[in-house]
Image (cartoon, rainbow, N blue to C red; front, side, top):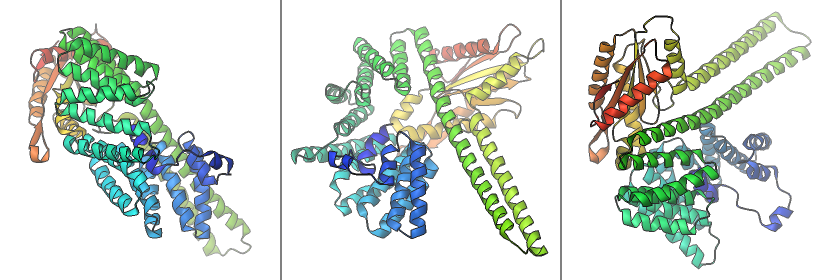
Amino acid sequence: MLVVTCIAPACFAESASAADEAAELTPLEQAERMAQADAAGAVEMATAVLGEATASGDRGQQAAAFRVLAISRYFQADFPRALEHAVAAERLYRELGDLDRQAGLLSLMGAIHGSSKQSDRALEVYQRALAVTREAGASNGEPIVLMNLGKTHFDLGNYDEAVQRYEQSIGRFEAFIAEGRPVRPDALLFARMGIADALLRQGETEQAIERAEAVLNASDPDSLNYQNALAILGEAHLDRGELSRAEEYLNRAMNEAERTQRPAKRADTLKLMARLAEARGRFEQALLLQRSVNELNLEIYNERNSSELARLQARFDTDLRDQQIELQALQLQRNRSTIIAVSTVAGAALLLALILFQLYRVKQKSHRELRVLAETDPLTGLLNRRTMYECLSGIASSTDDAPSASLCLLDIDNFKAINDQYGHPVGDKLLVAVAEALSRNIRAEDRICRWGGEEFLVLLVDRSFDDAVAVARRLCEQVSAVEVDVGDAGVAQVTVSIGVAHFTTAANDAEVIRRADAAMYQAKLDGKNRITVF
């Protein structure tokens, strides 16, 4: 994860020297060292230290324990708890006057917000981190905070500001090198790569190529910076119409992504390859590549979703265990009582009933959360792809001779250009706004899901095919009316291309999806912002 690479020097323990290795580590030092490889074990160790520190009133140890808990929860992708622990640690360090540690915790909080797609909040926290870092005189952490500010501005689409912050970060790194101080090469290259990416988004293709080639030549082939440089060079040459050069770099990027087993980078590269195929007029190949992107993104999403489900289940198990411990403690206290008045017995029984009821509510709430998480897309709140497959299989397996159902596959037109111009937060807002517009214009018995990155699939049931086509036209019109405020730039608007296909007794669900997909792609080729019927 790129954010982890950036914040590590500011927040996490640095590599130990030989003398440090020889010394015996404290439990918290051990927990911090193992946080990335064994986050659950680190949480257990830090929790034990926190309990002891709280009992003894040692606020310094409490702060240190909260800090390690925040780092461990971050590596578990449990961002709500990570933020809760980081806030507690930052407050204690502030009260203790430890500005250096406070700045590190603010940087971690910025990373948590960034990983949670809350870039506005991340920007605010990183700016506080920079101010505290400078107040503390902690110059070692300053270039890292500046680099994270650059990345956050990039995510917000503020490319000029991103370049400025990246340049400041590089300047601080180069000053350290001149002073003979150690500098992490990957962090310096990350900042230089960020400038190349921002320049490309601004249309400064020649400068972007020059910067990316410099990063490529200086990077380890196993590093993410190396693969990012290959992808940027491929995209830059593609933008310039130099298709052979673009193909060369993109093939290298794909080979490296497969060799190092980075599925997200494979998906990004495949998307650029689809653009390359389209630029060459190979529309069928472009369609196949885009399908591969969708399938790979679905695999990545399902893997992350499974991890989140496991985390939520573990949290439920922990809550359940805590409730059981409370019940056992109550029972022991009751057994030790030699004389119990009737009123006390009644009170204990009532308390026991309340605890059992609370346990039931925790269990039910966790089950609901698990079910919602398993069935819905976290950004739009629509059904996810897996749940829609279940709905489609029910239609296709219907015993009716002629199922009255149709599919509308919608793809937002020019969505990449919108992300590049306004930034991903605006893109996310548009996805949510489109989802809301679609949901308002279908019936309760119909189904809608987020099918891919900017694709939506609508299942229309108990309708004739003519009715389904009329609904598709209405959806196309309603989406074109969607607007999202982008500040000084005014508003962002989108259109969609829609492919419509009808269920028949001769076509299973996969075939109907394929037909809708082919129709949607034809709508793109015919000029976008329209519907095409298979």
